[in-house]
Image (cartoon, rainbow, N blue to C red; front, side):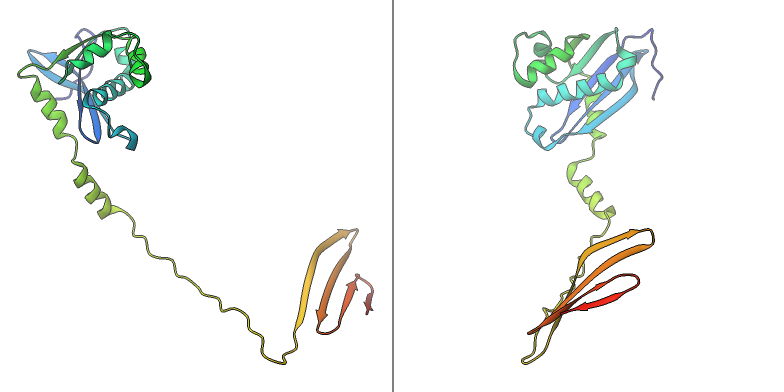
Length: 209
């Protein structure tokens, strides 16, 4: 049964990692039974899929600490995990790379990491059951994804010129200027073998060879 956070009870965090997602739960004990307060989870990015189980558990731990920051700040926390290596990370110094960054982030918290004992592993099983297998997720996404129809390709036939056909080529130079209700437009056309050009004004029309 989901409970509201009780500031008088010690907070406990349970982390779980699968091949493609991590999850965590904030729980508190009532009469010898752990009740959930908050659940959180996230899928892993492509570059995180090759992380080890301990590294994924660190991601789950950082996730729940971020989501429940205002609730857990300045409190003593107990973290339950499947591997005791996470406790080593909390106590290590001089780590490099992402382990060093994670250790620096976790160093601001007062936390005791414990390996799950008998009975407590059922909590991890509950978190594992809450993660839908990736294969089923992909099947569901395919079922609800919008259909992508191929765009119709319109083929434009190339222009052809018949033998002994006379053509007229016209182009507009793009100049258009309006000032005090006056304007100028230049229209040029050329034919084969000769051509003419016109320059048109609002009041006059002149033709030049």
